[in-house]
Image (cartoon, rainbow over all chains, first blue to last red):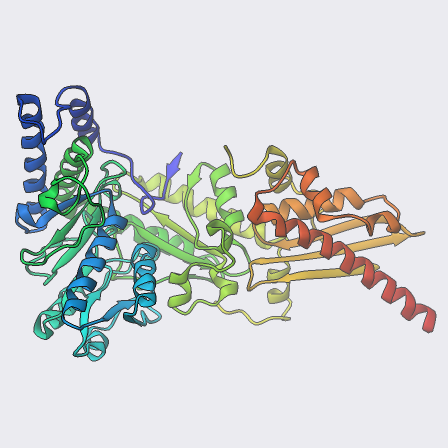
Amino acid sequence: MIYADNAATTKMSKEAVKVMVSLMEETYGNPSSLYSIGQKAKEVLEQARADVASVIGAEPREILFTSGGSEADNQAIRSAAALGAAKGKKHIISSSFEHHAVLHTLEKLRKEGYEITLLPVHENGIIIPQEVEDAIREDTCLVTIMFANNEIGTIQPIREIGAICRSKGVLFHTDAVQAIGHVPIDVEKDNIDMLSASAHKFHGPKGTGFLYAKKGIRLSNLIEGGAQERGRRAGTENVPGIAAMAAALKETAAGMEEAAVKTAAKRDRLIKGLSEIPHAALNGDAVKRLPGNVSFCFEGIEGESLLLLLDDRGIMASSGSACTSGSLDPSHVLLAIGRVHDVAHGSLRLTISEETTDAEIEEIIAAVKEVVTYLRGFSPVWRDLTEGKAQFIL
Amino acid sequence: MALYSEKVMDHFRNPRNVGVIEDADGIGQVGNAKCGDIMKMYLKIENDIVEDVKFETFGCGSAIASSSMATEMIKGKPLSEAMQLTNKAVAEALDGLPDYKMHCSVLAEEAIRSAIDDYYKKQEAKKDE
């Protein structure tokens, strides 16, 4: 089996599993309890907070544990919106290719009376900082731009956007779910006020994540109840998940630079190999992209069939085609970078990890070539294109 | 539980009647690339019997499987019977399709109807000559 869908989720690291199991079997106390096993769990929780904070250059008290990236996005945006509304500021800036955790929250806020500006992401999938600056108004209370895109892997100029927000006195949140553990992040240097992360994207467990919020930012609660997380997130802390997340993040961050170089070299080989397929195109900037992300569109075929046939060959990948999403429209990300529907349906996302071998890369290239050729062989769309009855787009 | 039934996967992996009939008596094409599904059916008709049928499909696994199953269900059958093929029958023959994929079976029914219509139109045109 070749697992090439690391943007969907990752395999847990052995260390993270070990930490998690020991907390479930041994230190299973409730951190709010005063007896020793509870207090031991509390220590583990606070150590995890310190570990996570140190990876991104934050202070422990600035880390709030959540159930994952989506919850962190919701809470960050809701909090900034409430703070803005208190000052009569109800304008929020974001981009058209954010994760749905951001877009759907913004859509709800729009219905609640906020004004939302979604910036274009251009053909290369990268936001232009000047356009952020131009969009900021007197009543802007938040700019939220993802660190790296989940489908096409493009890395945004976060530091520049953050600097603009600082100079204008506007809160800046970034959904760093895909970026953390893969590219260097320092909340101070990168001028980030709030950041969302999810453990299962960096070899930690599912159902765990965190929100970094710079001290002084008053967060609104999504979940009411007990006084956990300094009163900002009720519910008994997921200690095994949190500790495993911290272990996975420390491990990933320690080996990040080396892994990024190695993975990027494999990514580039994969891009080169797939580029040999006629009428195919890489989605998003070729250089400013995550080390493990390869996203292509192939003309004349549909993504779901491609995925099913790759699965038959032992390759796990994903697609932004409508058929894989259960909706009629293909991925909003591919549409945002200007891919037309016809082409966006034929998309393939391969997200490799440091564990992907050179032999696996060659196997993927061969399999994709074979499957694309096979599907084109009985595609009426491909027939029309090759017979000159329709114009090639790619 | 898998996304598709074994039957769907079988027809997807080993589609029956794939290809083109060069001198087809009726051709029907339905769907559009914008929505991600296009089916094209080619019919060879002799004495009001579907002697041969081939298809080409751009689409997802269930679109390919529905095309394949539909062609099998009408091959060798009288036109009157082929005309009665319903999307429900195609989906049932495939041991069911997920709700949001039912439109694939509708396309298969429409593609066959469209090819039969085309055949009748061509027959009419011949009579007029």
